[in-house]
Amino acid sequence: MCGIIGVVANDPVNQLIYDSLLLLQHRGQDAAGIATHNGSSFHMHKANGLVRDVFRTRNMRGLIGNSGIGQVRYPTAGSVSSEEEAQPFYVNAPFGMVLAHNGNLTNAAKLRDEMSYRDRRHINTSSDTEVLINVLADEIQRSTNSIALDAASAFEALEQVYERLEGSFAVVCVIAGHGLLAFRDSFGIRPLCIGRLDVGHGKTQWMITSESVAIEGNGFDFVRDVGPGEAIFIDLDGNFASRQIVADAQLTPCVFEYVYLARPDSYMDGISIFEVRMKMGDYLAQKILREVDVSDIDVVMPIPDSSRPAAMQVAKLLNLEYREGFFKNRYIGRTFIMPGQAVRKKSVRQKLNAMRLEFENKCVLIVDDSIVRGTTSYEIVQMARNAGARKVIFASAAPPVCFPNVYGIDMPTRSELVAYGRTITEINDLIGSDHLIYLDLSDLKQAIQDINPLIKNFEASCFDGDYVTGGINESYLDALEASRINPESMEDRAADIGDFSKSQLHLQLFNND
Image (cartoon, rainbow, N blue to C red):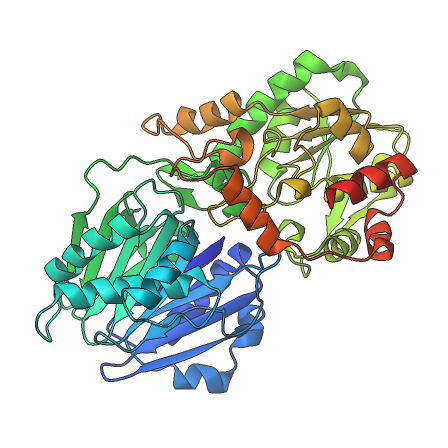
C-alpha cells in the first residue's frame, strides 16, 4: 500500500504535491518522494521517513516546475528499506520519465528477466516499480517513430504494457516535455481518482491521486475515479484525454481499502469510506446479537481510529453505551504496517493506553477493524484486563484474514496470519478474549454493495484465497515467503510473544508469527 499523486498546473506544484502527500501519509510512513518537471529538467528528492522529515526548505526550493508526481511508501517486511527503493523512479529514455506506483506486480521476476535479455535494460533495485517504468519506457519507445508523443501514441503503448503486466497497479508518470500519464489495472484493485481546479482564463489544473481526500483537501473538485483498465493523459497545457485500454475490464476493488487502509473521509469508486464502515457495524451488530448475551455487556469501545464508525453503529443498534476507553498517541505509526514483530508489540503499548475508569469491573465489547497477526489484539485484551475489565468480548469488523495478500498489502506470509489454519476458538484462546466474533465475508461485501450496487465483484483474497488476477498458486506463495524470511533469535521471539503461555509460545515459534 502506497499513496501517489500526479499534478499538472499553471504554477509551481512543489507545495501542492507536498500538501497532498501529508493528506496521504496514512498510506505509508516509510519513505516519501517528489519529482517535478520544469520543461527542460526533472528535479527529484526522496528519502526514508515521514513527509515532514524528508522535505526541508532547501529541498522544496529545488523542486521547480509546473508538473510533477509524489509518493509515500509503507514498509514491507523483508523488503529493502533504502532511499534507492523509494519512489519516484526515473529513466532517461525515451524523452525522460518519472513514475510512481501503488500496487504489486506479481510477475515482476519474469519481467525483470525480459528486461535483461529482450529489452537490454538494467534493473538496479529490487523494486517492481523500477521494472514497471522500464516496461512502460520500452513500449513507448517502440510505439513512437518520431520525437513527438501525444495521447494516442501513449495509449497505443499502454495496450502492450497491459499485455505484459500482471497484478495490481495504479500509476502516475510524467513524461518530459509532454505531460502526465496515469493508468489503473484492469480490475481496479488499487484506487485512483481525478480532481480538477478551474483557475480562470480558460486554464485548468489537474490532479490524479490515490484518495479523494487529497483532492478535496487542496480545494480541487472531485471529478471521478479512474476506471479499471483506463488510461488518462494530460498534456502540459492541461488538455485532458482518456481511453479505455482494456475493453472487458471489470471493477474488482480491494475490500481491505474499505476495512482499514483508506481514510474515513475519502470516497472510492462511488463509496464513502465512513459510510461503508458504519454499514459494517450494522452487520456486525446483528452477528453479535446472535452469538452473545448482549444484556451482559456494559460498554462498547473502539480501537481508534478506523474502527470507530463500526463501533458507534454496534452500540447504537444494540442499545449499549459507547465509550472511548483507549487513548491513542497520534505520533506513533500504524502498527499493522510496521516491520518486525518486536517493533509492532512495543508500538502497541506506546500507541494505546487503557483508561482504568472506563474498564473497571465492566464487561467490555471491544470493536477493531480487523485482526491480522493477532499480536495487537492480544496486547489490547491484556490492557483491558489490566485496567480492571471483568470480561472482554472482542469483535472484528472484518472476516478472518486467512491468506496472504499479493497485491500490495503487507500480509504476505501465511505464518504471520493468526487465522491461517486455525479455528475461531483457537484464535480466541491465542488473543485471550472471553469471546471472539468476526464479521462474515458475505456481510462485508453486502455492506459495500448497499452503498454502490454496481460493484459486483471484489478482490478479497486475504479472506477467501481467491486471487482475481490468476497465476497465484502454492509454489508462488512458497517462493514469496522464502524471499521474505528474516529469522529472529529464540530470545527475541520469546520477548515478542510476551506473556503467552508455554503452549502458545511453542505454537507461535513453530509458526514464526
